[in-house]
Image 1: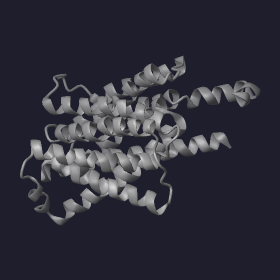
Image 2: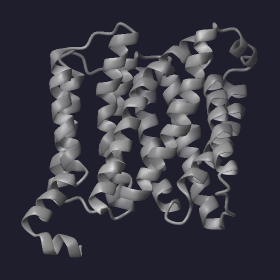
Image 3: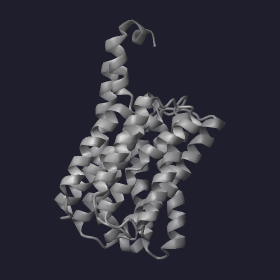
Image 4: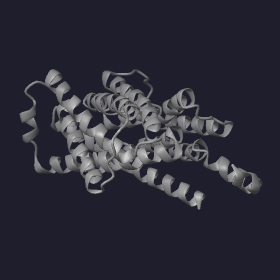
Length: 308
C-alpha cells in the first residue's frame, strides 16, 4: 500500500511538472504584455485568494505557532517575493527556452541544500541519478557554441537559487503545518511584498494591467490558478511526503516540457539532442528519487525492506 501511495505521489508531481513547463510559456507571454513585477504581484494575489478560499471553505485553518510563522515567512521571502520577481525579470530579458534550461538546475541545487541543512542522505544511487539528470540538461542545452550568460539568464539563475532555499523552509514547516495552508499564506503575504516592490521598480504601471487583449487574461488566470495555486498545493504536499530533495528531482522534467510547449506555442526550435537529453533526465529521476534503489532492495531483500 505504501508503494502505491508513493507511486501516486510521483504521478501527481509529474503532472505538476507538465503544468509548470507550460507555465513558463504562459509567463513569457505575460511579461511581454505587462510590466513583469506588477503582473507578478497581481498573479500571486489571485493565486493567494484562490488558495485561501480553498482552505477557508475546507475548514482546515489552524493557528500557527511562532516557529511556523517564522518558517512560513522565510519561505515566502525566498519562494514568492524573490523567486517570482527574479523569474519575471529573467523572462522579460531572455527567451523561454533559455529559462527552462536554467530552471533545470533546481533539483541539483535543492538536493545539495537538503543534504546540507536537512541531513537528507544522498546514496550512491541518488547521486548517480542527480548526475544523469544534470547530464541530460547539458544535452538539452545543446551545441549552441556559446556559454555566455546574459542578464535575463542571471535573473533566472537567482530565481532557481532562492526557490531551492524556500523548499528547505517548506519542508521544515510542513512537519507540523498543513502544506495547503502554508501555500495560501505564502501567496497572500508574498503578493503584498510584490506590490510594494512594483511601486518602486515600476511606478505608475498598474493601469497598464487593464490594457491587454482578452486572451491574455485567460492565460493570466490559467497561470495564477492552475499553475501557481493548484501546482504549488500539490508540489508542497509532495515535499511534505517525500522530502525536498526527492521532490525537486522531478523539476528536471520542466526543461523538456518547457521546450516542447515553446516549440508548439512560441515557434521555438526543438532539436534531436534535446529529446535525447530527456531520456537521461527520465532515468535520472528514477534513480535520483530513490525509486530504483527501493525497488532493488525490495526485490532482493523483501524482509529487510519491509522493516525499513
